[in-house]
Length: 332
Image (cartoon, rainbow, N blue to C red; front, side):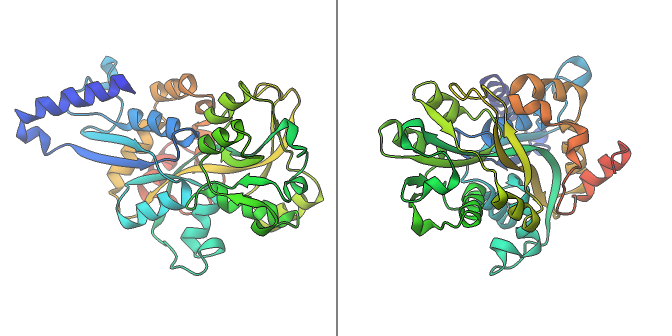
């Protein structure tokens, strides 16, 4: 990331003496999530992949394989809901969202039923599965979702997809926010509170391993609370965007057995108002062979960002530019 920033800065300095080239440069903001989660580092990888500042070496010469003239940045945010609102309001060109939140926003259902549907919300790609983490102190006595009753539990910040799913899970197990001592913190803040003995558990929805949780597990004994049982089967019947998932043993220090949970899809969404050619170029850059290798080596979840996964579990319409690419690739 630092190397890319230096390249971009050098390009910008060069542009001061070349105003004609500056007209060809376009900025592209990608809303991600908190810096301790998974959206932010993956967003950084994607921003690097699709960027091609003026003066960059050509892809075939070992340079950027991104969209010519595009300078993309990963922007830290509150998460899915905030990103969708940012895209709808024109403050972001694209953003990460959980598949469930994107579906509700585009159709005006679920958590969006009292708001206007964002009917021009479009999908660029389904990226990877996001697992529902419920992290608890090992000495808290929490072994199931039902055990959260009466405990100090962080549900993540307003505007996050995690908060949405946390409420659904609590309800499925007969609990509500009033049954717990609810707080609304990002995972790194919740982890800090847990280290200080001021937090019993917290929710986080994201790809594993998540940095804040991995760091916490290296310093304190934790458990991952299983999300399983007949309550989950009823949830799956009602909310089709959830899928059964599990954390492999040793994903986090001290968690030596597989732990069942649920997942939703992590998606990259945008507005239908964006140029078809631009979104086509962005999608093509993401699934370039060179980019795929960078994803696989850049983050544990990067290996899941594949062309086959891109069109799975869409939920909302693809942007016309992305759809054109996938049809050319034989995936739609």
